[in-house]
Length: 194
Ligand code: FES
Image 1 (cartoon, protein in one colour):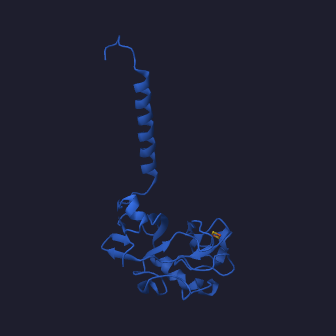
Image 2 (image 1 turned 135 degrees about the vertical axis):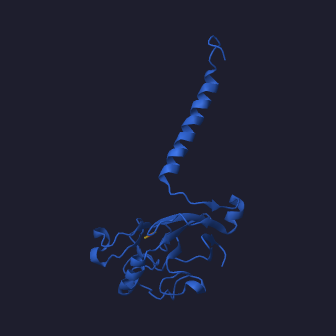
Image 3 (image 1 turned 90 degrees about the horizontal axis):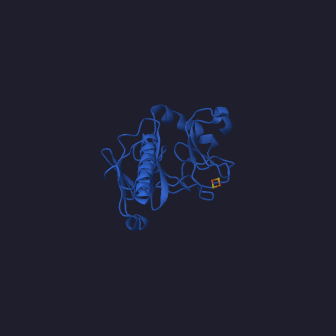
């Protein structure tokens, strides 16, 4: 375009809008931990197709969320310290053996998982379905102080779960967070298949 050509304002606005959107997407990418995933189409996902994710970039003590059947699944890379503290919750937990709760056979154990360091649980509170927040800080004053060894807190009505997804006594949620079927092949986690 020469200096003397009139500016096409409509096209210019479209270009500016596109640049703004790309800028926002770039900023979001910087703030969110990168986790490589291979997700099926939305239709297949809604029907329950397995969802895979490379979890090698999850840091010790970090939680990421993936979506399976249009619902959140929480994945935590538990540290040795987190695992050591789990037994301290037993007197505070409603169903410490998970006998009334949902999990595959391979997750019917003290840590409710295939391999101790990796927790994979539903991110849907068993009370009325809100998403619990990750609260790993030991001794958090607003969650029980000395009796809090890290876990999840549901902001809707105050239910608390430990870092095995086991629900505390005296809260509205009746059951532990369900463990979905999942498989671990190297660093690839697949939710929705055993
Ligand atoms: S939905 Fe979580 S406590 Fe009510």
